[in-house]
Image (tube, rainbow, N blue to C red; front, side):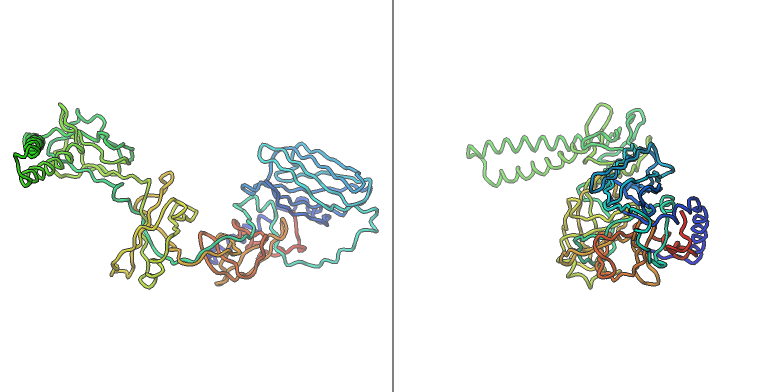
Length: 498
């Protein structure tokens, strides 16, 4: 929903007025065009204007075509046209290129009256399509043409040339499954097992000659990869050797007593004592060798997980102490969303199984379950500072686009799913607190609608009143259409130019 300042409004009105003043080319073509067709096809939008058709009279067709991928004009390609009526009379035309960007202008003459089916075939490197237009009427004489009693229209004129110059798009009003939700704030954190601060188990020096592959920020490392090499002090070396010796002695003693126990020469109590001592020293030794490789040049510090080097806390040539933090490694392939839910909505959060969230830098709202995620826990305690209860979700992070530390706008799903008539949130223009949209009535004519809305979910808003299924609303460029409505002479039939 969009709010605008008066200053921006006035400046953009000026832009629209200037833009419209450049559209006087082919005004006569527009004035002579009594028929129009707007049709959304497989790949293109067709907006066609043509005069009343009479046998023997040449007629100019204005065929506007734009690509539905980006709503930009078709700028190259060939167009073949065929008209066929009930008695199999045919009229054809072939055009090598558009007369100008987005517009083909064939001149056609019909020798027989009747209702024709028009088939348009577009072949282009940009976009190709086959378009069928039914009921193109050709009259025997001008006397047969019905009188046009259409008065002035209140529809808003916004020409194709204006649409093509801006970021513009429309979407149909369709039914989607929406779900009520509880809004919350949140943040993205790493999974504990996917986050590691590597500390040095020994004291020593980071010698440059032994660290030619010193880690760089942002590089990916595999579990067990060498991060850096520490040349240990004499005390550190003897300490590590002692851990290894203690482990080997404990192992030997355990194996000896175990043999005696099997021959009933040692008690169960003695076996339990040496087993406990062995397992304790084994854990210390395994922990050590999981972190380091002992080499002739010193001790290689190994990565405990797969991940990216996030932070480096030591420099080459520096003195290292035992327990000093060296490198932080993060694996962002699976992350945690911590949602801070208002205490008053605790029951809804407790019962929910899913959530969606928005983060800065990504346009689309993301659904936890769609990312292979799930709710993992609800905190048993209340955050007394902001009166919220943390709710935790975990999810996959495709292409690592979501970063640890990002803040999120979260929507905890708490209601029943229901199929609703919807429009994208981007279609809504907030005008004096009213939800309004602009509906494309035909290719260059729009109508303002005030909506009654309901649920907001996943970037879509439920429409309770004001729209019908299948109508197309402006989802990009709605504000410019609004400005066109404020421009003098913008209504269809009041100085409509092209």
